[in-house]
Structures are given as C-alpha cells and as structure tokens.
Length: 362
Ligand code: SF4
Image (tube, rainbow, N blue to C red; front, side, top):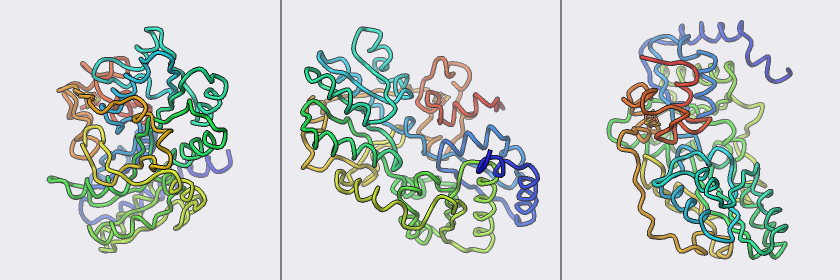
C-alpha cells in the first residue's frame, strides 16, 4: 500500500538500525511521546532490535490514559442525570472512575452513546431537542479543532441542549513537567507526528534550548520511528539541541494554521489535571467565557467531585517515563485488558496495554 509499505520496508529498517549502531558511543534514554508510537514499537519489535545502549521510555501521549479520574467521575455523574444523552469516544467507556465506568452507567439504563466525532454529538442534539446532549471532549491538540468546530456549529444552529465536558490537554507543558520532575531520565524526545500536523513544531524550540536536548518530530511506522531515533541520537552524540522534523511528508514548522485559529477562537489555555501526573499549569484548553453555555461543568455543578485511584496502579510514573509496565506488581496479575485497574491498560493506545498485547514480560 502506497505510503505504508515503504515505511515498513525491512531492508530500510536494517539499514537504519546499522546507522543507529554506528552513531552510538554511549547509552541514551529517549521518550516517544505518543501511545501510537509505543504500540508501533512493540508491535514491530523495535525495542528488541535496538542496541542495548538505547532505552526507550514511554510518554503520556495517550488521551484516554491522561484524562483525570476526577474528569471520568464527572462524566459518570452527568451521564447518570435524567434527560441526558452522554456521548463519547468508545475508548472512554471502559475507563474506571471511582465508582464504575460509563459502560456500567449504560447498563443501568442511562443513555450513553459512542460517537466517532463531536459533530455526531451535535447531530444527536438536533434530533433530540427535548434532551441535553453532552460530549466528552477529551484529547490532545489533534481533537481540539473538531471539538472547537462542534461548539461553533452548535452556536450557529442555536442549540441550547448541547455541551462539552472538556478535558483537552496540550503536549508542550507536559514535556516541561516531565523534564523538571525529580528523577527525570529523559534525554531526548520523539514528538508525536499527528499533534505536530495540527500545531507544527515551533512550540518545541524553546524546550529543546532550555533543557538542552533534541526533539524530533516523528511518525508512526517502523522506518519513521527509526529515522526519528537516529536523528535524536545524532543530536545527542553531537550535542546539537534542536528540533528536527523526521515526518516532513506530513508536518510543517507552522502546522495547520486554520485549525489553530479555530482552537484559539473557542478555547483558552488553562491549568489541567492529568491522570497520575496531577495538575500541570497551562496544560489544558478550556472553553472561553463567550461559550459558557456550552460548558457541561457549568450546567451540572460538578465542583465537589472527590476521586480515588487504585493504590496498586503506577500509571502516573509510567506516563512520566519514570517506570515501565513490568515494574508494576499488578501487571498481568490483578490488572489486564479484561480487568483494567488503570487507564494505561484500558486504552488501545495505553503503554500497559501495548506490553500486554505484544507479550512483553520480565
Ligand atoms: S498494569 Fe494496570 S495497575 Fe499497573 S500501572 Fe498498568 S494500568 Fe496501572
């Protein structure tokens, strides 16, 4: 398949592995930010093909995983209200809150629906004027443009029965938090190609300079990932602390400016709580005051939610690259995709799920 097969070419993979081997003079720890990259690394066995000196740690770039338990608990409360149709991406339905998950709310007879986009939720609101329709607007910079558009569309339609429960997160403040954390081991980043498709990579330049490390915009196929790693290793070996683009077939420095404009029209930067990582200043996008009527948190008075996470789960440390799934005593014992204790096992992009699915063991 064009644009896929050539990025899985085994000859090219081995050439890149040879180049990585030749470039390496000492060990380095590199974080791939995105859960999609983690899954690709595990699926294609890249972690097992790399030289011992390269340690990959897995970042927080899984939107389901980083949505705070408090936000999941708010979703459970809203979805339990009479007259509400609660809409969400499918992955969120199994994420455990303090008292259950959205599946259990649906099983109790409430109207919880899976949608593929926030615009589907607007359509449901148009078709059900006697119900309140709430969309669980989670995600990184990739989902923000469509979520912002749904608000503008609902406003244009004059809908008063549509709102968002917003948990939008931004990558650059999370990178700052990881690098500033005590015990940080990350020496270079593979930035998430799809996030950069929207945002470009200008936001990473001050991070590379401040923390003196390479950041490489990277795609998702084996050749993409090895090219990203090679570029990061060369940067580290030569002390060149820049942002480079190993995904130039998709990403530009400026990114998608019309999409950024829509985001900035609807959302303003705000502090955001990340699952396992706590509050990260400026790491979220919240609805601007002009769009208050579309804010589900305002409609449902949810400020007093108190959330409890499983004491066994170390996903917060995993999401910061401080631990790995095999360090968790519950991995493949109390916690599995059938009985997940934490979000990194629930989500299709979660690191624990990748280790489980692709058979990594001690
Ligand atoms: S294996 Fe389960 S309990 Fe352990 S960190 Fe992963 S999600 Fe949490």
